[in-house]
Length: 496
Image 1: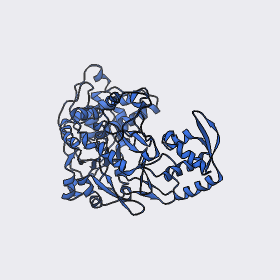
Image 2: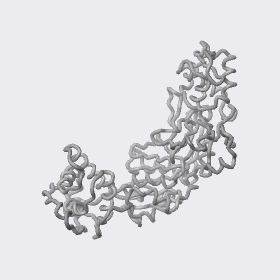
Image 3: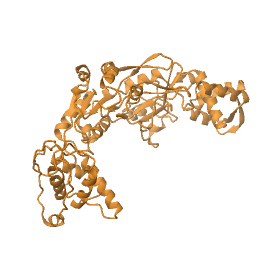
Image 4: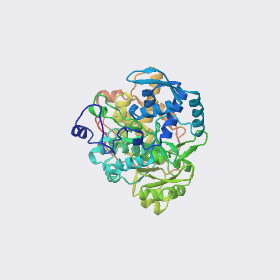
């Protein structure tokens, strides 16, 4: 990677200090040779862009293809000498306005038939490979402080936190398994925050004459840029985008085609597979075992990359290319891992962590956390009522999603009826009837009575707890293994 040049005369020591937290930063190419791309490819991008916009200044064209005006000046002169473009007028800063000639429009049609891609100039594959190695997530090794910061907005008990810490720190794959609704997907999405730093990725890749789109707004979030800092003044290669470390989530829609380069025969442009888009971040395979492909197929596809950190993809031409496999793989499943895959696969996913049902104390904590989001006052006596009547007596198991979902229904009810948002027993009665009607567990599930912790009610709190209406009958479900603990008396951060 070449040294960074700045439009201002900052010292190299100052710039090095500012960018000390970056392990990789693409510097702006000062010539076409520095791009690593064939001149014919850049020429085609310029001509196709002019065919789209009609007329454009040289600097605007350079901006459209994400290259510097200085690097393209000689190419403009060459195209004009070949009578493919002409001057239509002058532009500021010693520039001109260009348009295509008849020959130029004919050539644009030929280029479009070959490949219809119009956009930022691509980055050679080898440059991307080097960047992924420099920005690998395995080099981060987050510590306890980073994990606490990443999980600050969710509830997680100490035992689970202690299990997750070493697994995330290792950068190896892990299985999160347990009953649905306990936050496995949410937990996995928080994991990426532990690794902090943003990363640079190319918008498109170029290899063996093929253009492969890599940047995907569905998975990649651009990093916020502070235009007032010296760092933002330093030039960088605009073919690259600075993003937050990605979290790519795939569920039941995952197919084998999603793991290969997908080629559009009409545009002759390809799309990068999901594992390539997740490099330097996390790849969450949600509801593993419920995809349209067998777990064994996924095993055979990834068993080598999981160990070697290298994947092999096939270009539309049939050529095999080697790409990085540098992400934290997380499998989230409601099934027992050993029932899905064999020992060889489990050995490559060294950490298997069960996400169990929340305790009554944690259930209270989850309501504490969500009260701020829904702008209502936390009332322990109402949650005790909810636990006793609608979970213990109804033999329902606690799930971490229940506080959020029930409060969401109460919020909708109060907004519709122009009532203040608050926790009331009759509101929970209504929400429970609506929420659990279609979520019934087998009637023959074994029942196991359990006690619910009751927070003493005094003063106004005791008087404000209205006599609840009789709850709607529901089918019995599996029992909750509820330990008798006291609910928190005041809002607190999630337990760690």
